[in-house]
Length: 265
Image 1: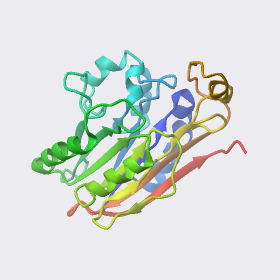
Image 2: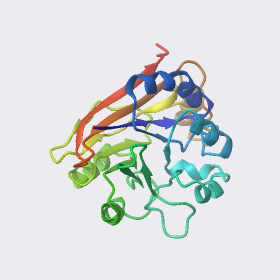
Image 3: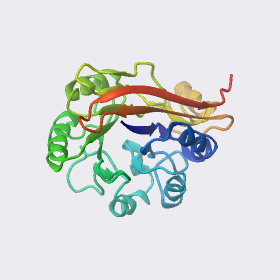
């Protein structure tokens, strides 16, 4: 059996604090073979840059996925080209920096895991089709002989996420949703052997609105004016999930959510 720990969207400095505080204990308790985190908001709550990425690597995270906000920090552009395990969604048009797929070999020397990053289109920017991109990339990964494939589907609509989970059931080990920062309660293994969760949640502050200062978000709803999404203060928490799978078949055996940290009450 192989175990993957997936960590939800890391929200700025508070998200990194949540990982520093709770991740060492989780690693000791769960002993995952691979750790993946969505890091699109790790730098100041908007984008990724070299220093936060180095900090997260030092905590034991192996692969970094992202989404639409990865482009918010221009420093991400060269990083996406230089870092083999920092991904952007694979269904962006040709010519954008970086790549959407990575293959990571585990320490046992026999197991390789493909990580595929995709972005949804419902209530988000229209980019290439995530379903057809998944077909192409999964076929290539299977041809390369990987033992398992995990998909981070960075999307807004639960219906689109669940549709992709059903579409890929039996072809990948897991489809884990990100982007909303709110962990869902629908984690399960689908009939074809694919683990599914609509959203892994967020690693970050619990005192705001999806990790952002509450007064800024409330103001946006009241006056419809643009604002800067600064991370909230207060207590922090770690959210994610763990997926166990059979390395011979690539079929998921179980999915459980992971929750550590304080609630602001």
